[in-house]
Image (cartoon, rainbow, N blue to C red; front, side, top):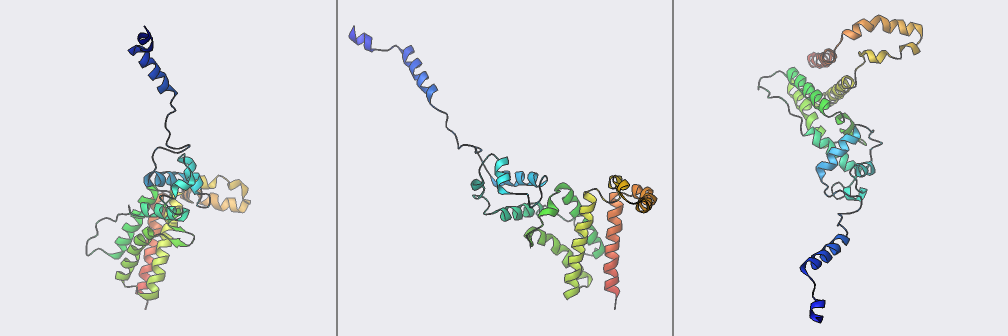
Length: 240
């Protein structure tokens, strides 16, 4: 009888084992941290945040909060905020692909292709212009893109100081032109929503131009601006 009392039925053993299992707390990978973290996740999240915040407002703390982790976890992938921003620029710039260029293609056409490729990439990644240079430091990715302009102008006949300054001017003017169009452009009717805040003489001037502004397209603005830039380079090459 005593032996029988000490024995437990299989059903009772299973019930007690189940009760003990239910009391065990589930294992967690870490409070407030995602189960996995990767460079790709950090880059994707950072690009989304930069569409909302300025470069100055972008912090590792914001990235960490969006990823439900802590700032220190990001340092395993990027040693600093500046390193992350530089990688964002390089990540975008690596996708800059010029169309196939015939050996005898005119330098003017190469510059046109370069601007068109830049516009396409900037439209895909609106933050591109923001991250090409941080704290006075130009990313290596952007330098590779800008070198296409410099070598093209070198082949056209520019050299030395003239090559340096005209390469710089062309890339800056192209960025400004592309950025202005992607932001809506001066020609957009939206730009006239606060016209009534101007003096009457100023209002009359812009109202006179308004029908022409409304007829313009983003492509027309880009084409005209680029044509002016190339014409300037041609005049400089022809100058004695």
